[in-house]
Amino acid sequence: MTQRHTILIPGRVHSRVRTRVEAEFDTVVIDAADASLLDTEARARISGIASATTINAGFVDAFPNLKIIANFGVGYDIVDARHAATRGVMVTNTPDVLSDEVADTTVGLLINTVREFPKAEAYLRAGRWVSEGAYPLTTLTLRGRTVGIFGLGRIGLAIARRLEAFGLPIHYHTRNRREDVDYTWHDSLSGLAKAVDTLIVVVPGGAATEKAVNAGILDALGSNGVLISVGRGSTIDEDALIAALKDRRIAAAGLDVFANEPNVPQALIDLPNACLLPHVASASMSTRNAMADLVVDNLLAWLDGRPALTPVPECRALDRKPA
Image 1: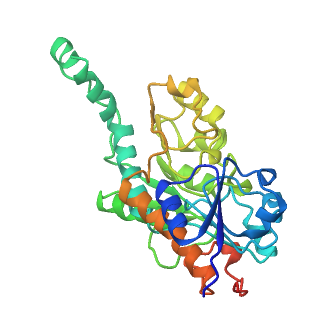
Image 2: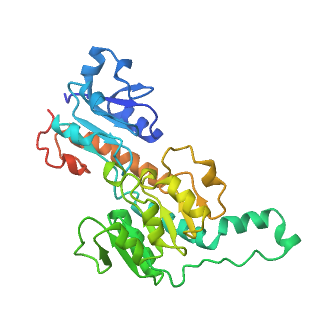
């Protein structure tokens, strides 16, 4: 009889993840990623973790028989994957299945930011169209814009393809030039910002991108500049952004992610030239269900001795398969 593995769910996770994990495995659920909530015997039984929360090195080390951490989300900076790899623990994420949804949302957020559609709808609903006349003409438009994408991975490329269809020239910055696209590459973020007037940030979080979009980058973007952020809130220096929007050193910003979610600075909320969403880029039922299925399918594959479906880069070299 095949060994029935035990999976730990620390903290909140998508309901479909929990339902499928409970159907496929023995399951332990705790309120947070705190190993002290489990005794030694319980920790020894854990083969895998399904989570959408911070998993640090200490938590990884608390489970002597841990084989895989399946992260719900394409971004996995909340998981110490490098340390997990040194322990022979596979880490997976959920790329691809959300790329199109996030790209669609990004384009919608960009259009809403420059054309002010949420504000125009609020104007109508408040009866102001009747009492005050037509909504004021928007000062911004997509026409004539040049788009720069900071991070041309799966999602960035999906965004670029959509905006290319809008007739907009595409530039990008990544560590290395891509050989499979004809878009203009810049070897620095500052160079990209100087060359465009619309900057879309879709890079992962982590130390390498912490506050990468700072006052200097915003000034390079210029007074007609529009910033769109859909990757990780940590990539934007929010204080610098608030100042740039207040002083009209850039024209507008559209944000779906923030540094301290769900807490959004009131100063940002109060700005008329900021279009804000509560981290909903991939938040459709079909996409979140597909992400949940990929979490569980990764657990099933790795614990059955098969390759993980979507290993993160730090763990791709792992050749140890669990018993």
